[in-house]
Amino acid sequence: MKDPVLIAGGGPVGIIAALALARRGISVRVFEAGGSVNDAPRASTLHPSTLEMLASIGLIDDVIARGVVARTFQFWDRPTGRMIAEFDHAALREDTPYPFVVQCEQHKLAKLGIERLRSYPHAEVNFSSQVIAVDPSEDGVKITIKTGTRREVVAGGYLIGADGGRSTVRKATGIDFVGYTFPERFLVLTTPFDFATERGAAFRSYFSDPEEWANLFKVAGEDGSGLWRAVFPTLPGQTDDDVLGADAVEARLQTFFPKPGPYRIFHRNIYRVHQRVAAHFRKGRVFLAGDSAHVNNPIGGLGLNCGIHDAIQLAGLLAAVVLGERPNADLALYDQTRRPINIEYVQQQTIANKKRLEEKEPAAREANFAFLRKTAADPKMQRAFLMRTSLLDSVRRQPATS
Ligand SMILES: Cc1cc2nc3c(=O)[nH]c(=O)nc-3n(C[C@H](O)[C@H](O)[C@H](O)COP(=O)(O)OP(=O)(O)OC[C@H]3O[C@@H](n4cnc5c(N)ncnc54)[C@H](O)[C@@H]3O)c2cc1C
Image 1 (cartoon, helix red, strand yellow):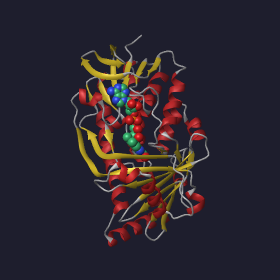
Image 2 (cartoon, rainbow, N blue to C red; image 1 turned 90 degrees about the vertical axis):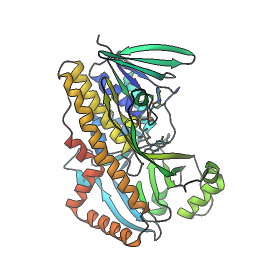
Image 3 (cartoon, rainbow, N blue to C red; image 1 turned 180 degrees about the vertical axis):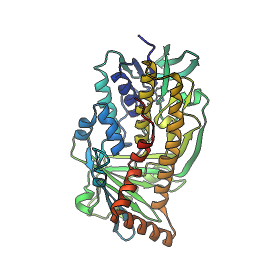
Image 4 (cartoon, rainbow, N blue to C red; image 1 turned 45 degrees about the horizontal axis):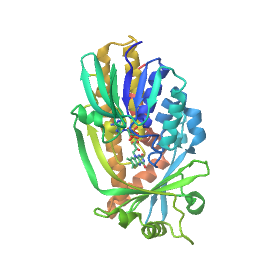
């Protein structure tokens, strides 16, 4: 048996990488610091390009069954309450078998992957196992795992750092995380209030506003009955108490969409947002994937998608090299392709998305609206726009890995 591939982090990216490797017969050992999958509300949007990849590892039916299918998305002008444009993924029906988005919470995806991994005797997922040190060499990688008060050194052929934005693997290998952090934080409120019936909002809706932009997303929730996540920026310097208190939350939602009676809130979450890319995605036998390699604002739902694309491409390359189907030198393709793709598609697109929603200049706002209307109305332009926003363009550009 070859040395296993070690994976730091059992989030969606680490688990998808593990499953893609295990399906090719490669031994994998995942080490997750938490005691279980983190089920706080985070990413949920899975674009057509990612659905194609989930189909390739046998997860597509379960993801669709546990998520919400969102064929369209909308842009709104929040101050006037006008819908500016609606885009329909049906425009991609010649380009992909999945001309829609699925809103499936990321913890469901990780749990589905873990269930599948159980059927592979050469795969293991270890919880409460924090990677605290990395020791790479010419012919392998050793990592130190902390489990309670115990420390254990584990050896493998390669290491994938899928351990999130604060990645220990990235820091231990001395790779810089280049970019910036926004002064404002993002607030996510989860409510069962039905914005589709009450407001006519699509399951993914973006509201432009020079004072306070907003996003709305529908997810299935644990019982499938449907929940909405409303996302807002906070003001720089606002404390958690200023933003998360019951009165502040109620006032914010009533200002967004006034209604009789208070909103029921299932979850409130506030987090810091960054645009950063690792200076390298690979150093010798150590690779970075997902948030450990790149982070971005969530407008457009691209970060997790790009992370899953990393996982699938990396697993394909590693499996081919370990199985002797490709030369070692091909591992260089990972950094050579995934890093520029993240910068050109995910960083640029998410920065532009945020700018479009928060634009203050009236003439620039009108120009944005005119562009969106024209693009949605012209079939060719709509298709080109959706090929980019769904990351299909970026995937079609990358070399085949398996
Ligand atoms: C609070 C928050 C809210 C977000 N909301 C949205 C959103 O609304 N929309 C959106 O598109 N994106 C959102 N994101 C981003 C999205 O969640 C990420 O892109 C996605 O989680 C990336 O997956 P990942 O597997 O790379 O990293 P993660 O999901 O962060 O998984 C990393 C895993 O590694 C584990 N880990 C960390 N350190 C170690 C270690 N040393 N050893 C072992 N395990 C370790 C962690 O416990 C975690 O389980 C949000 C992110 C955060 C932090």
